[in-house]
Amino acid sequence: MLGTYVNTLAIIVGSLLGLLFHKGLKEKYKTIVMQAIGLSVLFIGATTALGGLLDPDSEPILFIISMALGGIVGELAGVEKGLERLGMFLQKRFAATESNVARGFVTASLIYCVGTMAIIGSLDSGLRGNHDMLFAKSVLDGVTSMILASSLGFGVIFSAITVFTYQGAIVFFAGMVEPYLTIDVIREISIIGGILIFGIGLNLLEIIKVRTANLLPAILVPVIYYVITG
Image (cartoon, rainbow, N blue to C red; front, side, top):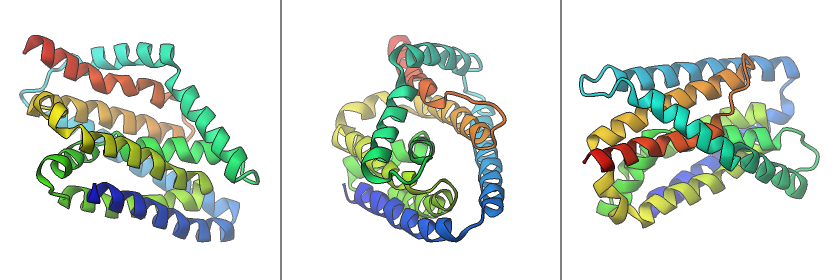
């Protein structure tokens, strides 16, 4: 769990540093920082998804089916509403003076968890005791949390809870899930993760409201598909 501990701590420290800037930034600077983050997230999402799709072994239709099925499941389960309710609870409990705690919590949690580094790094940590990838992710997440907190405020720090729970679960159950996370599965998850990150970027830029959290179940569809087709 060392890698997950470090990753969680990096997000907390980065968020606290970002909050120092958040309080002193004028609204126009927060706006331009948010636009910069949104554009960067769009680029990361697009390149991640395209990187997987350009692989000659990729399944060109699987990600479309995965997104559609995952969206239906997510809507039925109310994943986004659940995260927002948790964010609102945290807002009332810890930061009643801020109005966007839920947004910061949900946005940061999705950014940190949908990438393949979280999955692969946690597997390496749990199976082989190799924390290098999670250490690298910690640096990226720490810097990202500092930037996000400077614009979105206090809610970003609570994403550390999501990361600790999500990655910790993968580390704990690494031996059970590793056989199902083949190269093909990881590639397809990477494509879907890139699309979800792109959706987060659209939300940050307020181009369109994408219920990204409700699309999270799409990540599980490639796993089920490859288990069935064996």
